[in-house]
Image 1 (cartoon, helix red, strand yellow):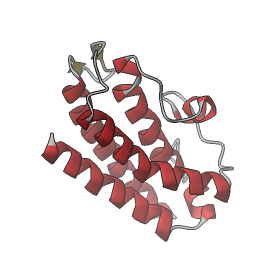
Image 2 (tube, rainbow, N blue to C red):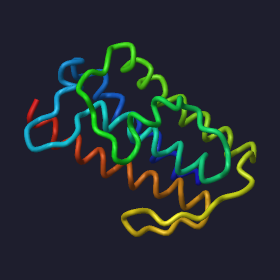
Image 3 (tube, rainbow, N blue to C red):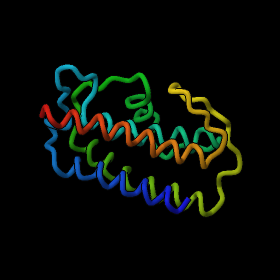
Length: 151
């Protein structure tokens, strides 16, 4: 899992660069032809990781219910994320990697509820969920690379 966590850290640092590079207006802009924006994609990967790793392990998430509802699958951005919320997302982007790594190393994950993703992936273990999370984050990074061309 060392390599998997290393890939995840690198991925999250790439996302962090978007938060440091783009203005609040750019983060919130939904370009024509897209159904979401940069900030939604970043917050969505945070929410998805918490669901894949913690919820499927029967553990509480480290995010608010409000964040879950705002950025889970099926949600749509409203284009009105405040700088305060961006700052919170930025903090969570890195802190939750550290939290998950610590929890993994300390053995808090005792069970895992197998899950079939909407895209057809079968996740039968925690390790598979963590590895799938990297794949999922890569998809959203690709979407963001397309969005930035229209900002």
